[in-house]
Image 1 (cartoon, helix red, strand yellow):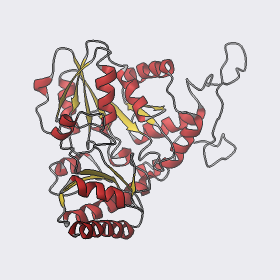
Image 2: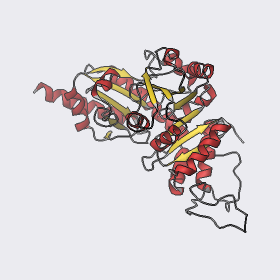
Image 3: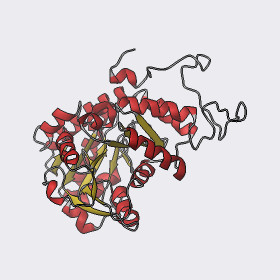
Image 4: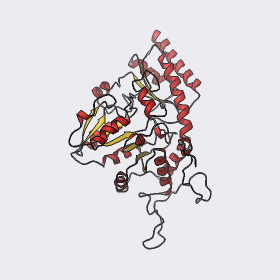
Length: 386
């Protein structure tokens, strides 16, 4: 069986013909399973513990991330919430200052209530070791970050974590396992919002935790069946279906993102274009070392709040919506969407201003996307003149 990741998106090595030759893995839409006899099991007893469709998906995601186990959950936030059950009251985590707003909300409103403390720093460029305490248990990063696209050196951070006996937890949603594999660089646990690039069609919620450590797998499996936020059989099938086209989608979306980033750089009304595929991005060289691509996410700032809001009002082909990673190109306003629950002073400290926009670039024909942006910018300029 071929080993290349594009093929592994479609074929799992141990695939057999025990499903009547079905090319599409079946949906086992059942909550429970009959026992052949007393003390006997088919290997499946109750779908909260395991289901064949979800198990197949977990095997595929574990393979793509080069892990020994993957757990499929009902959303990305369910995955992070389960991850936090690894920690106890009194524990301390170092987390990146620029994180998805939902993660910040969870840490601030739930985890702190449960006795866990946090230190937020720019892990891409601040000295981490000076923030490690006796009770520090883990370092949590996104790379690139959401939405400011900061790039953290995973291997370097992993060395620090290992030296101090800490876990390194990496949210890999923005690049997907097709472009980046944090476990190979020393991370202990990888997090995905499977809703995004893995699913790829904006039609299912999912989350994943992937590890290459047996003791973490065993602990997480116990917590998983105990807390119960598992992925349903049908949604597992939807994500399986989405992963089959992950490679071609990521390649096409990345090409489109680079073209849009270059176009935005040429617009006078745009003050910043933040895309790690641009040579001037501070994390460009690190990305080339640790990833196989630059992804389809980009952030840009325009000269005023009014210009940003006008863009959101005028886009048509590009849709004004929260989320990312689907075949459709979406534009998001972090201030009122993804980071609405982050205090304004913290948002602005991290660079999220009222003129900041985030794009998840899809797989449409790039000419149509550029024509759309050209039309929108020209319409706004004309209105401003009047």
